[in-house]
Length: 408
Ligand SMILES: *Cc1c(COP(=O)(O)O)cnc(C)c1O
Image (cartoon, rainbow, N blue to C red; front, side):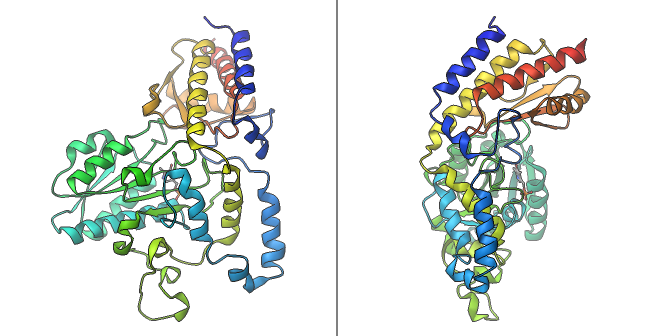
């Protein structure tokens, strides 16, 4: 059995050898608190404050209306989309930033159903991942009702076998927000393509944590938020990916004026802009966009494969520490141990389930911040740009101490 002393020393050695260790300095984090909730709200990149102050005092305060052009406000949704693109394996010109993930799920799902129906009116079935984050499920239900589609909820892994001539589209979460399980994006997308169905992937828990490969795998549509692993700030705008080949046929259910081909013509009839721009709706929220754009500068020179390698190494090390420190049977890992099936969080099921809330409260009091989801799931998010091996060692050690106290 590994001892505490050995794990502490190993953490030190691994932090010393970590090629991403220097990135931690770009964030407002310190060794007083172990922050393992970046899968809910990413930590603040240090340069964001100054950028926001400049946008407020200079661009808004002094230039005022001129900033729509001179400060690049009008084109921010496409420009920031192109900054996110390499992180999710997309060539430029396919991602537009704006609105919440929820709103983008609605745009993408309705557009997918419309595309499928235009190709073949017999395609009327929408499949949704049954473990989905709730908002996706609610919007899928509404989109189905609006378009006359039928909605079927099933496990993501069962989707390939459920595909048929009536399947119009699939809505799947790339990583399960509760368990941290990674769904098979290449496999499910390939099966959908072979069956003639459209895919909509929700990347909220994968973008910024692992390679996605949207273009390489032929994904049709994707959405994601920017305040989790992309650290864009509370409520920062989400994004919508529309594969280039589909853009001319992308028919948005929310055709706002900023997605118009000639917005300032103020024409009575809607004519969609070319490219990803047609996914835009209304006036961009510039302050949030500026924070996000600045937050994305931390990715300069970062290889997403190195991020993934560190994420998996941290997850493995955390699980080893949990096995060493936590009394047998007090928690059960919900997250698959296989690398190919894991996102960038470790979820532990607490037994009994109603202990999870008090256990997480105790962790937070002792400077280890994760969160919990009903029933009984403790979530520990791993953000490789700022999470250190010593962080996960301490988190597991404190968890072990708390669980020993509650069990005795
Ligand atoms: C976090 C998350 C969302 C959040 O949607 P908002 O509209 O930003 O509130 C949606 N889907 C998934 C899978 C998420 O993890």
